[in-house]
Each structure stands twice: as C-alpha cells, then as structure tokens.
Length: 173
Image 1 (tube, helix red, strand yellow):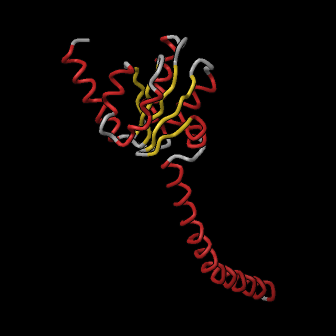
Image 2 (cartoon, one colour; image 1 turned 30 degrees about the horizontal axis):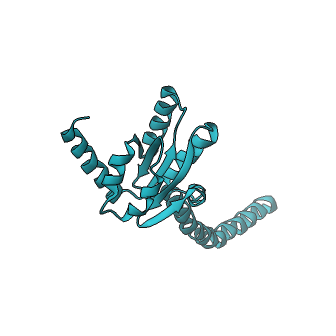
C-alpha cells in the first residue's frame, strides 16, 4: 500500500468506526479464502461488512472515535465486522464462528461501550431490530383482532337466532 492509499483507508475506517452500530474484532488465522468469501457474503446479505485491516492502521483509525477503547484487541491476524444495526455484526460473526473454529471473537464495541467476547456473544443472542419491530407489531395487532371478534360476535349470534327462527317457521308451515 502506498502512503496515499493508507491515508484513504484510515479515513474510511475512521468513518466506519464513527457510524457503525457495533464493531466486532476477531482472529481469523487459518480461514481459507473460500470460507472468508462465504463469511463476507453472509454479512453483506445481513447488512454488514467484514474487513481485514492492518492492526497499525486500524489503531490509527480508532483515534478520536467512541470505540477507541478496543485498541488493545488489534494483535495478530484480526478482522473487523461492522454494521449499522447493533445486532447484525455480532449475530452473523457468532454464527460463522460456530461453524468455523478458526474464527475466535476477541471483543468489540457498541458506540462508546467496549465489549469483551462474552458481551459480543450475549449481544448476538438478542433479536435484531427487524425482529423486534415484527414482535411489537404483532403485539399491537392482537388486541385489535380480539376487539373486532368481540364486536362481531353479537351480530353473528343474532344472525344465528334469526336463522333458527326462520328454519322453525319453515318446518311449521
């Protein structure tokens, strides 16, 4: 990398650290190119990104961001997974780490909060923002459906009574 490329990369990575909902740092020594491409495509499909960065450049990019507390995690072969949704990057990284024992999660950051490996794992078990929205919408719709069925019940019962009287009159005649 030339000096200008390094500057551009550091600036780009700095913006990533400032804008991301969460950042996960992991070791990836021994992961094949095919496995890494698979991981990247899964992360991209979920709305996140995976980058392999030089530790020195990542440490420089962390300066002046809220995530500056995770500088110590950048030792050895590290990758950075990030997303705007705080749950996406930890969840996809944990799923990939379960199937590939060579990926070791070191920790991460969520805003100004530095996370250790256990915190990243617990964050990965939470439902995503879309799942929470769906649950909330379901909770809101359920009472409305019950109200509609309660309001409609007397009318349907009344219709059954009229039908029964009509049937009785037809049999009598």
